[in-house]
Length: 182
Image (cartoon, rainbow, N blue to C red):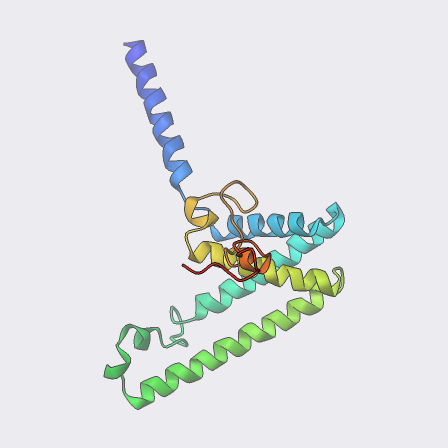
């Protein structure tokens, strides 16, 4: 009887661990992983890395707030209109959708400028430019089935930089320097 109870406990524990592995990281955890990955890529010292993580996570929270308001609570993004085929939309609906898109883009630009100013207090301009490059690489990896889709942390095995980087580095070229075509 005790052995059956032990087996049930072991089986349920293994099942919980399996489901935890498959669980996607939350936004906050993903932001921490991304910040750590960027710190490692930039080879920041501990003090600068801690400051970067703080500012980066604050930026992410503001971005989430901007997207959280979008369409879900205030209807600002034309979410309802996005569900419709544009051919079925009225001119007024399309106009509103476009204007809302401009507003969102402006708010994102304002956030980027705000945090650029924050970054410039403790990072060099080259480091800031590299932060933006790394963010773009991470977005490409997420969108193309990269590390985050596999549930792996950035900077861990499975994270790959943008595949297009190989061409810029000269990899995949013929002996005469021309790129290989498929």
